[in-house]
Amino acid sequence: MNRIFTLVIIFAFTFSFNLKAQNSFRFKDQRKSRQVVKFNLINNLIVIPVEINGKELTFILDSGVTRVILFNNLKNDSITLMDVEEIQLQGLGKGEPVESLISRNNKISIKNITSDNEVIYVILNDYFDLSSKMGVTIHGIIGYNFLKDFIVKINYNTKKIYFYKSESYKYRRCRKCETFPLEIHRRKPYINAKVQIDTIGNSLTDVKLLIDSGGSDAIWLFENTKEEIKTPIRFFNDILGEGLSGHIYGNRSRIPKIILGKFEIENPTVSFLDTISTKNARTFRERNGSIGGGLLKRFIVWFDYPNNKITLKKNGSFSRDFNYNMTGLDVVYNGKQLVKEEKLKSISNENSLGSRGSIDLISNYSYKFKPSFKIKGVLKDSPAEKAGLLEGDIILKINNQESHQLNLNKILLKFQERDHKKIKITVDRNGEILKFEFRLLKKI
Image (cartoon, rainbow, N blue to C red; front, side, top):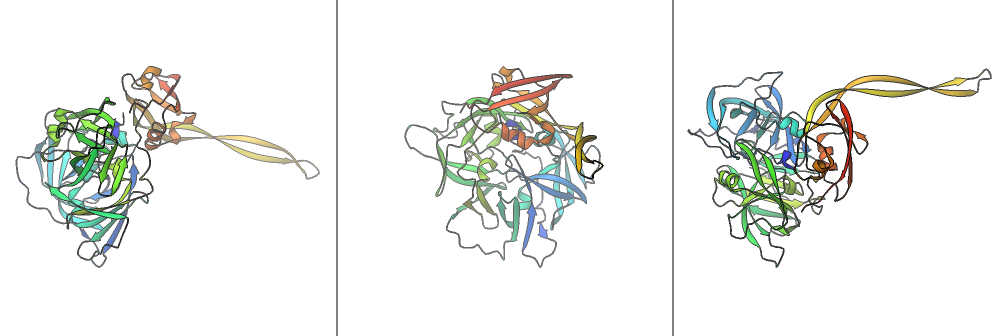
């Protein structure tokens, strides 16, 4: 049940009008040929600082979206938007189109990279509540418009993105790298791969996959888009994410391998979308699924939109196991709580002869605001549900560690560690302190 980060942000927009081509992003200092942007990696997702019309915000970098998306969650502040018009958007999920805004002629800057005439789509209601799901404030999503004008190198291990001018960039010789054609369809990048779905035999199926850095899962596959693409025998049904138009449902499972050129990735977790979500996602009929951050983070990635290609080089994470949340808990950030902290100060006492006598310990207390986390949902028949945990419980401790000493990413990592690992959770349920204990259960 890793659904809270299967980000929700894979949109299939439909518009009743056409837009003129937007301006290109450029370096503020044209004498430079490279710019570096540091990012945070939260559950396989790239989080970067973005400035819109002079306002500093936090965005997810998502190669699977074509537009700049802004969420209406600026509760305590405001942002100036230019030339605003009402529209409707339709995304993955089962709901109806939602009312939104389109804003033209905006200035967007990311460190020393800028554009003066960008179009922004504003989601009026915070359908996703990404900030609580990520543990940090997320104001929006940016993708193709920002990536298309450069050669972009993403190093997941060092958490740095390098932007190069395409006209002056020269690829270094790299024996461990492999370059693939990048098929761009409606401003989205696709790559050809092979998957082995059946555990019996070694037959491989050719698939075309969206490269989606805004999805935290390793792989999504669309059932029945080819005869061989079907959920394996071992799976469990789950909500895979929250879409613009509602829940995204499907099955979680594993397949023996996925092959990208000379790279063979074994036993990856795979999410198989339901029929309705698949229909909304397949604006490109040849598409069979997606590659997400859970797989991309195992490589150094070069996006080269100007030359329609992508280069991969495996990193130190390449051979690590693919894990998922085995508790059944959907945990979200719950704002800040006031926490009482004790600090012990030692004072030594000397006797009349000048030698050290006793040492006194004096307690000093301070109150600080620390992060709080709550259970938003509990998967039916999961270890957490059987132990008695409920929606709305406030988490106080996990394995004897105070929850305010953690962040959401660290909590989720504890839930993915290994099969049968013991988990102890202390919660506040309407003022009553309760303790629960269970073991992680590997279903696939």
